[in-house]
Figure (tube, rainbow, N blue to C red):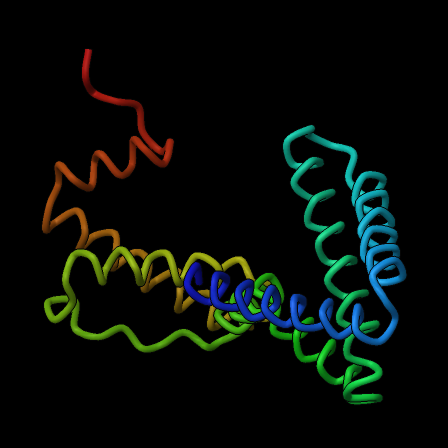
Length: 187
């Protein structure tokens, strides 16, 4: 997901630079800068009042809102005289393909996907067994999966844990301690 996020950020940055250049060409420097700084300020204020918990997260959210509002406004102002009403589709496409939304969509899809039948455990590597365990975690927590499927998932997870412990008991014990399920046996 990190690669997608970086690629999306590059695309939005390049489009914003092109839009800023177009805005300067059609409206001049002062209006383009006023729109960019003004809307970024509104976004920053919006982010500042939106989140009132931990200061570090608040700072991060404030900056993200400012960037979103600034980029969205300059895209709108810069591209409207060039591509007219199509700018709305551009903004919708960029917003809909935003990494946070894509990540949430993928998480929702994984949580609502019916459980895949468990292959013969001997055919899976230790890493694949761990990956399967993590995948089924979100599925078990989903409220939209019928009770029968949840019961099948729980049975699968039991078999996965048994196999993980059988293959490498020491590594399994370390995993349980890290997860907080057991106390360390070291004195």
